[in-house]
Amino acid sequence: MSRKSDRNTTPELPERGEPIISIKGLRNAFGDQVVHNDLDLEVRRGEILGVVGGSGTGKSVLMRSIIGLQSPEQGEISVLGRNVCGGERNYLGIRRRWGVLFQGGALFSTLTVGENVTVPMKEFYPDISQDLRHEIALYKIMLSGLPASAANKYPSELSGGMKKRAGLARALALDPDLLFLDEPTAGLDPIGAAAFDALTRELQQTLGFTVFLITHDLDTLHEICDRVAVLADQKVIGIGTIDELLATDHPWIQEYFNGPRGRAAKTAQIRAHPADYEI
Ligand SMILES: Nc1ncnc2c1ncn2[C@@H]1O[C@H](COP(=O)(O)OP(=O)(O)OP(=O)(O)O)[C@@H](O)[C@H]1O
Image (cartoon, rainbow, N blue to C red; front, side, top):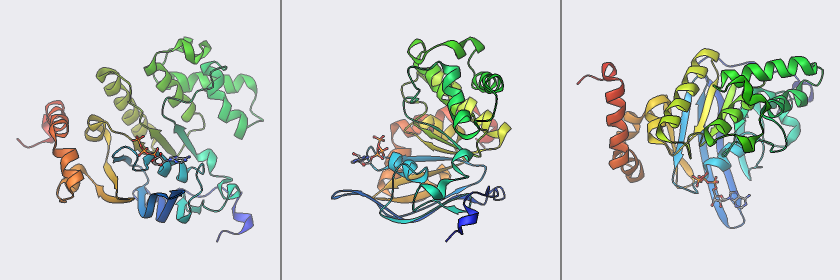
């Protein structure tokens, strides 16, 4: 149990490859519906972990549990070495260490993109001057691949792809160690989705953060994920590279990665990066 004085101190980052999120025995239920039971998962610092599973298997609930928006019935969740279960106070000092891109962007519709990006700065660093906040926001907006002019637009004036990028800019506002992305390429055309994948990978490699990425997009999994965790039967039933997962004989995993769409994504990956494959 963390001592009271530990809660406000900034936890240290683990070494690269060591667990930055560690979940043990997680149980989530809504009434009679058990979503997770005895679920274990480790996310390693510096990786892009893809999280997949059929609709309703609890991917978003898992993410919400990690970031404190859902109180689990049982289990332990440790983020940056801090046990975050057991109330809001345990999140003090670490909530600012992550950024979240929710499904659909979840931008505040009455604020401009620039104002949206300054929201986390205002919350966690209220002493930063307004000018500096706007300067940082502009930098994050451009880092996310939007033109500077997007800062003065309202979400309703943006395309779906631009909204995702604006949401990403807000998620990056505090230079996070951890980035949570919930279906970031859903609703994008294939070219827009590939561009968003490339941006995610480039930012992750340049800035060094860890990514927890919920997706149904097989191209994303092949193109940018270091490992993939598969949710089914209320648990993580497999975790590893796609090749490692394919070595298991779980029917859902085989169907998912070896079905027609899975094979097409793999072929596209080989065509895009032939040097990575011995043919
Ligand atoms: N606040 C809630 N109250 C009641 N049930 C909920 C709540 N949040 C989620 N659920 C249920 O928990 C289950 C898992 O939901 P979740 O959104 O995590 O699924 P998912 O794997 O992300 O699905 P999808 O791929 O369709 O987005 C669903 O059956 C959902 O209806």
